[in-house]
Length: 129
Image (tube, rainbow, N blue to C red):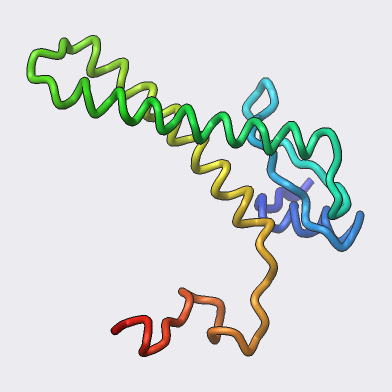
C-alpha cells in the first residue's frame, strides 16, 4: 500500500465525503495519530467539544507562559523548576501548533484575484504608512 502525505490524505477524504474539509481535532489517538472530523458547516457536539478544548488549551498555554517567565526571571530557580517549565512549555507549544494548524486548514481558499499566488497577504501602501 502506497503511503500519501497527511495533507493529500485529508483533501482526498474531504473530496470523497463532502465539500467541507475535515477538521483536525485538538487531540490525538492513543498512539499519537491525528483525529479528523467531517461535519457540515453547522457543526455538532464533537465540533463544540473541540472548540471548548482548543479554548482551554490556549488558556492553559497563556498560564504556563506566565509561570515560565516567572521561573526563568528568577535567578534562584532550581534546575528542576526550569526543566519542568520547559517541559510544560513544549507540551503547550505542541497544543497551540495543532490548534493553529486546525484553524488554518479551515480557512477558505483565497480567490485567484485576491493577493496573487497564495503567498503572504499583500499590504496596501496605506497600511505601510
